[in-house]
Image 1 (cartoon, rainbow, N blue to C red):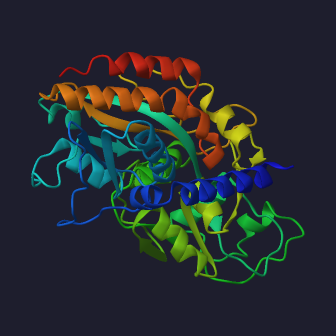
Image 2: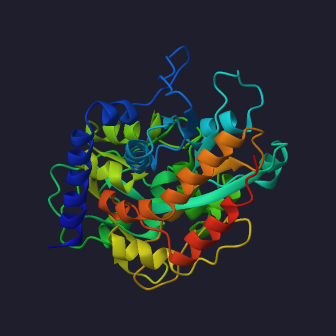
Length: 367
């Protein structure tokens, strides 16, 4: 069975898991975006943990939280997949209502030192899983799998390469009949850690991108761009946009049946986004004490070029012993037992040494 088939099988297991979970799975699989939504009933002596943030890892988080709540019914967990930028805002807690403030945030872009300074209780950043950002495309009349060189995909998102039959795209796809069709990029309209991971990579490979944009969670995209909210929004829009190409989390591309390009890596190889190539991308990462590390352009010969860790954001001091204990227990479980289900959904389990460092950081959380 090929890598693509294995990943499709794993996604099917996600759908089965949500079906088995029934009402609990349905509840946790729904984003609670917006205000005025009811708070779930808390068992006597129980605790409510509210989180918000990244859409990139949200399928895995929702599976984790549903499974954990079945084992620990006294712990009720909600998660709003509203994007990394909004998740960070709600976590930092400045200029937000008490209703919107959350116990934990989630982001594919680790907090900067400046953001950490805004949280008087202190911050613990936990890498909990990792994955790939793919370039998905909609060209129904091109049966062959496309290859995109570094110069080609940087040029597309800089707005310089405007047609699918551009010579730079054709050079990497000999014998493929490319259409004379305008390229439309599909991008995020909300502050996004997926955008940060993608632009961090573009910053590493393109001097022009570096000088004009740099890495960012929110970009004023050049060229012919359509915007959507969340990974799911980008994937959904792209599925209906012939001639479109967009960046999106790997698992969302497969959920929507989108085709993904082989990308040229630093070693000059055109590689697929699969578990083996993503593991190769992250293998060289050395996790520092603050657990903030990026791999914007991995050098391993088989590495997929756009891979990222994703973080859970916690406070060092909650002033509530029950909540602090529940958060420590929940995320200790995700870093141990929870890692076993990451690959089933197309994510990359943490290397053991990274999980061990994250477990150690959890112990700094005080009541």
